[in-house]
Length: 537
Image (tube, rainbow, N blue to C red; front, side, top):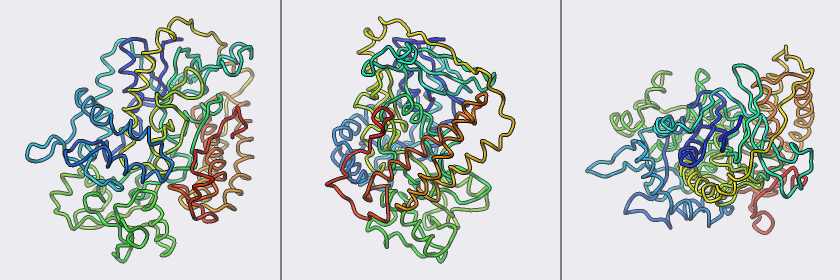
């Protein structure tokens, strides 16, 4: 089975890229559940860009650099920021309906933590859903785009393995992927001339997360196993405000609530963020998450509260209809009472290392969106910069592929063998998978969370090693299931996060380690780079 381009993932990055390259080549888009099961679809806040005469590029660049705490690539930051308005207007042309402002203003621009100006274009509090809707509507009209729902990528296909190791390492390239059809249980060999990883983040490696169930770090794990370089995986962003209710999972209380005046308070109703950061409730996410964590540990409370009751009820209901309706469903009227919230794993600031065109260190392999480490976010992502990064880099990667297409297209597909199950049997006891899954998530939450300690990282390293060995045995001994594929990826991601966190002997951005509480620009103002080819260095 072959197509010119194989796109793995159906979020904003994958759909934007597929739409653009479908004008000159055939595309197969693989998504492991339904096409709308993406982090994009859950994004509430919006897309940050300079869209007002009161704002400018320099301010957006400065805000991003401050948030990234010394690790942003300023060239990339400027590139993304300066392309922002064009990409937002392109989304409008594709049918995205952003909320308009009052008095004829084109956008109702929101304010979020870390921003110096209102610059977040949004569709109420369902921006990601609206973007996903518009892009899927357009892509369904493209005859040369095949969308495979309920298909899960297992491993990337590498040319040297297909040619029995005859290809020199520096000439190695990606030639597609093995893909599991969830409905039939069969593994398909999907060949391509270019492969694009847009699989989202890895939030499910932690016990509590705002991410959808699909966020198991598949793209990063596959790229690492294939020999591509990954970067900065110690920087996991914990969203400060996830709705605290055991009856509902993955429900985010948008940053925009604080942007519109919401105040974090403890059980006594006392504001506390001013004790942790001079910016108070509008500090960047790393600072707010640590402030909440400290408050909960000091008081022993299970949560803190986000209070926006001082705003007019009509304003709250109109600005945050989804948040209002969901909280009301679970007994909280946010116009009258504060919202119970806790931090939860939210965004992977590191990922597969790419250049300014979205190309990885492995030939013919691109990475976009949360899967990629572009240099934009540095040590901490500025709110609502992620959707912007996705559309800007999707556009650049599509332009790059179009430029190189004559070279790509003249080469035939590289043939490889089909997946072989051998004598593998079915896994009868799912407890083998669920037990390891639970172990990993609790290990990461307790030992590699918001605040870290060197001793806990050492214990995490000792405990993840036998888990990796056990999962490899499962993978070798049994027929593949989606749960087993995801478990394998989660274990690899956990190992990479632990390794990266252990290497950074300083506190910077989202990586706060008690043993090294200060930044060390002399030794650590650089990316943490890991790769299988170079013994993870």
